[in-house]
Image (cartoon, rainbow, N blue to C red):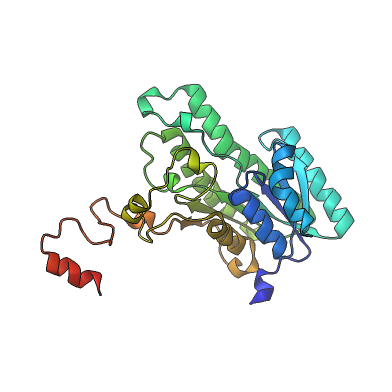
Length: 285
């Protein structure tokens, strides 16, 4: 079983590694599993703050300050991959697309979304992931190597996203991109999957999600928000040989948030149940 999680001799690119959340945690777990991780972020100071300590602990991490939303940035990432391969003898294996997100200011009614709003969120959350995936897929094909590409979508792309339509639609497009690329690359041995996080405790989400345990119990089947490590664990599974026959899938990692109907109470029973004895009975089953 350990061999199926082992990433020894493999290079994994993590785009969006410097935020201290899911990307940094994926970097840590993939490196701990044996991969040499090329950790990418636009800002070197973010890499120094969040990824630097991983290298200090002896984990095999190479930092690259580059803007993955540009052709020049992608070229810099691939140069780092080739340099790392030449120095370590490892081969390119994986890509994790985490770069993206949305600032609190992007929440608004669909009637107020401008073309600039729309284009900016699609560029950050879809375009960057696609062109990074394209570049890594071309590199893997040129080497004749199998591999695994994992992108981060969102529960907002799996369901409705009221007052966040551009972000939700871009994340839904990541799911469509994942499915199509999976078909095109399947015979090359390149698997393409995604994860769709629910509400997760990160610095980015803290800008618009407050701490409210009672609300979490009400809204999420498991009664709590997720952690970056739980999201990273699902990504590591998709990177590893444990998921060797999985492609074109989007794994919803949300603690059951998507399962909750609006009429369910904190104990997951229907708020419309008038008979309290019946509610009490079924909650003990």
